[in-house]
Length: 157
Image 1: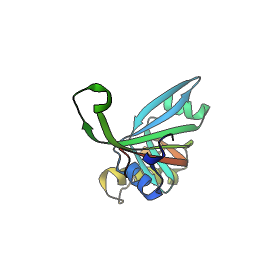
Image 2 (image 1 turned 90 degrees about the horizontal axis):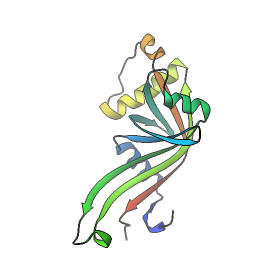
Image 3 (image 1 turned 120 degrees about the horizontal axis):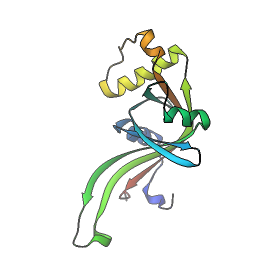
């Protein structure tokens, strides 16, 4: 990162930014072009879980072809306005970017673990029950995060 003063190095803060985000943008590789898709997600340790609904589609094709992914989540804090466009207008935000490897989960117990992580994030509950037949036809993606960096603008000083 060019501006080291904006870098967030505290792992707990990076994970809090990730966990507090409502949407995760997942960058995939579609042949020779990038493909970015916003998704609901949950986190369990260094694993990010995605509920992809259908068992087919471009996301899954991309992962089968190349499992390397980039993820991004952010929080827009506020817009700062001024008299001119250059130098006076800016935004304050927190963001994280991570890299990892995605896999399409086939194991029923792992699928339930991932779906529980997603449901916990949005509902605050862990006590979900899932019908095996429904889980069997649901695509669940696990991203094993290999790195995560955070950025804060403006820099704290």
